[in-house]
Image (tube, rainbow, N blue to C red; front, side, top):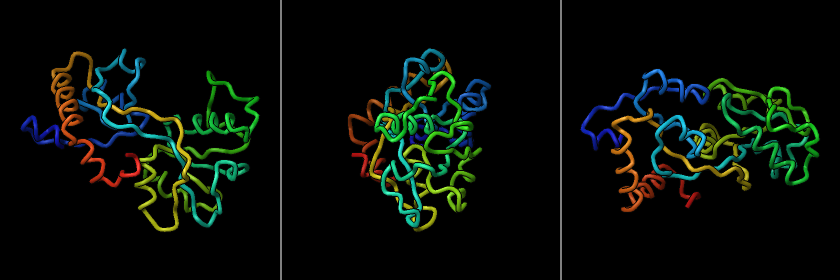
Length: 212
């Protein structure tokens, strides 16, 4: 919305899924994508990216009644993840690093959370509404996703807590189609707002103070 104000236009927000956030951009249904766009060389080969403006993390949201206080407490449990996210794989990698599981069956080139059974099992959700509500299922004790999204899910209802341990840090940016006329404008705005503290103020206004 702030970018639209700078441009002097009325913004039209389009809901997208994780798996469809680039498809909408490719098909011209949106002019820019701001939903979970990691700043990376791989993505930059196909899209123009703004300078990184925020660092997010993967974490876990648990039901307080589950008595889960650490990643190791999730052994033998079911965890909800979002379709199109790599949170499940990042979680598995962290458990391997910690020694919670052996990881003998882990293959980074063929990982599919639907068929992972060592240590934990994953329930794949199609959208955020399903992801947010699945914690009411007695068989699911945690949600694994970006911490910003987990904060929203935590506020959905009482009795939920985010674990202290964060992993898989990623710098977020804004994506536009290659050669878009919006690219230099967005870059200029992000650089300016990073320098003058505008983005930091927005982070605090949105309740993300524990990121600082």
